[in-house]
Image (cartoon, rainbow, N blue to C red; front, top):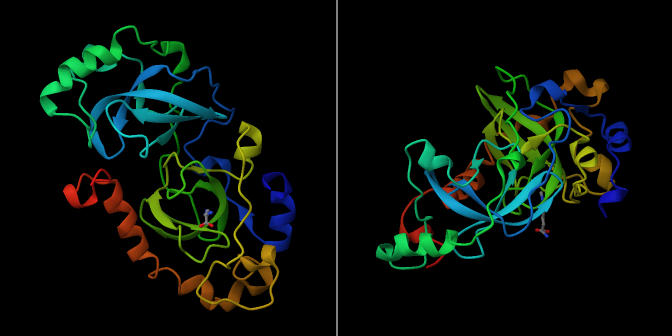
Length: 277
Ligand code: MLZ
């Protein structure tokens, strides 16, 4: 599936402009991946970013690691780049005066945490510090412009990276709109978020890229349009530059409810959103 998607052809058909590489906080040469499955690392709990937990490397795709917090369940795996600032070798917190915390949703009695930790780390294989790559600096300010094309992690299916378009800008925030999915997966993020990549990143980093969806991407769905031209012809084609197409403007306020649902899911918001319940 992914090998049928070709940015060059797609951009030609859709009239889109790729966002320049300088917009992104991503390494220009792919960060190496020397991690191995079952190695232990320290990772910020994605649902409770102030706590650092023990995580196990479950797998990898290109420079992305699939991670699972020890003591948590197997339905909250998350992905981090090998050059993410969220991951560190075991021992990092202790060296920096911190403590390893139980993950949000720790499945056992909190009082069993110290002995659980001891058992977890006893005889475990820790990822050597050489596996962890320096996080890139990233741009000083938001250089994205609406209608620029990019590749972005689908946060509802975080193993997937998909073609997307910048729908709007609000200060440091950019609105990521997935091509061909009618807003169902769209989200706002900071311009230097590690989940967004320049066009061609997947190909260069040995990561699959999903083809665009077939549902159109704006508020207006025109029947009978081809899949590739469907998602983004309007507003990108230079000939329609001055016509301010309605689909370019109107979708901006619409995705807000979708985004709220996602953010709550990732927050430490109490028992109602705990996946264990
Ligand atoms: N199978 C799922 C995946 C959707 C992925 C969309 N990514 C932007 C679906 O069809 O809903």
